[in-house]
View 1 (cartoon, rainbow, N blue to C red):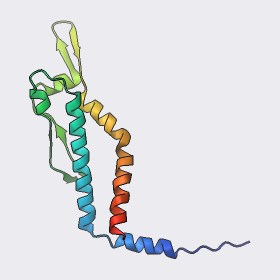
View 2 (cartoon, helix red, strand yellow; view 1 turned 120 degrees about the vertical axis):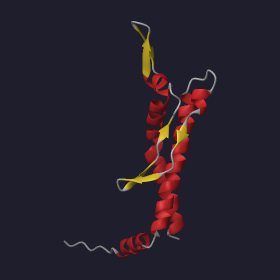
View 3 (cartoon, rainbow, N blue to C red; view 1 turned 90 degrees about the vertical axis):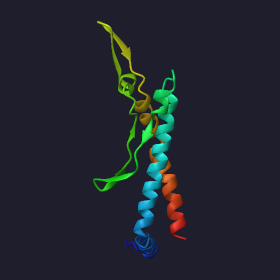
View 4 (tube, rainbow, N blue to C red; view 1 turned 90 degrees about the horizontal axis):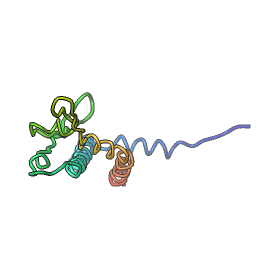
Amino acid sequence: MSFKANFKAFQKYAEQLASIDEKAIEQFCVDFLNATGGELLRKARQGTPVDKGTLNKGWKASAVETAGGGYEITIFNPVNYARYVEYGHRAGKDGWVKGKFMLTDAEIELKKGFEKALETKLRRFLKEKLQ
């Protein structure tokens, strides 16, 4: 028994992939990370308790940067008491105020759909570039 396979279609696809401009790939990564960072900001703001709005308005995102062969974006809140609201803090001698975990919970929620979102946008990108 013998088996024969034709890999011409696969070879053609590999050549098409290799022909995609490096800058287009980089731009895809930056755009995707900016969109993901924006979604994380939105979710963190939704989970942030609002008294006067200072903490809620404090959420920021850095610019996308290259790091360790990849890309990263940092979501942060420079309001001086943000970490106490996020993780909790001592109250009085024996008390403890539980944290709200605004960013932590937002990140957990975002991770649930991250791969699917990436796959969808990557398929769209490849379809556009390989036509």
